[in-house]
Image (cartoon, rainbow, N blue to C red; front, side):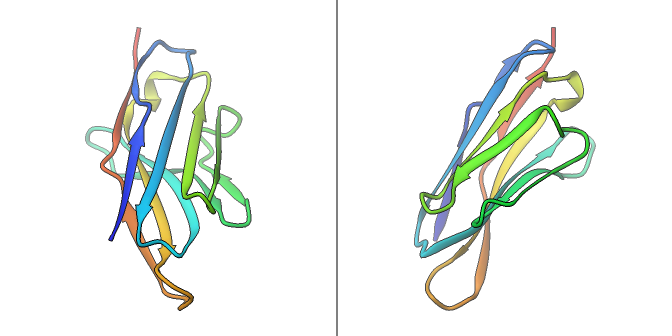
Length: 121
């Protein structure tokens, strides 16, 4: 089994910054990708940013230029630096990891429990 634990959420004023962290542990031979998703009340969960084992990143258009994903898949950690936060960024942020248990190229997906980010004055 694999566990993902997020931290770093909280309440911040518009224009402020937060950094989210996610650490994966358990039976992990290799992490192929990690990412951040978010879900606002009454809305579907949406992709925020992802990073692959090779370092390739991708972002939702709504966060480009404001959010930066980084991490070390070899260490099973990922971060999301969020700058210039807006009220519409308010959501529960979830970490997702795609891992292999062994050399066998079979991937397994896991989600963290989520961390609340609230942007409000």
